Image (cartoon, helix red, strand yellow):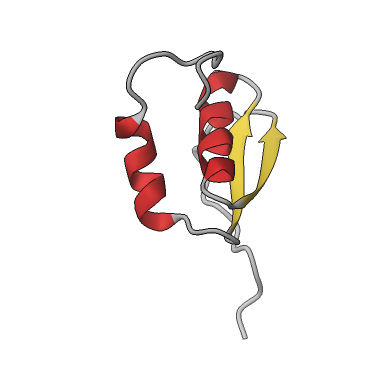
Length: 77
């Protein structure tokens, strides 16, 4: 990250899992909700972009947890 970045200090601990798994040309989808600290997904996006990945960020409204049984996502064959 550049010296004018909003994150300071040693970035090795944040970059390590991404350097090990993200390669140039990978497509990365970053999911976050609006109530999360935006600096988190911004650092993830910047790190993946620096590694040559194509990034997309999807933000969504936080939903309250449900106590009911979840419906299946797809029909059974």
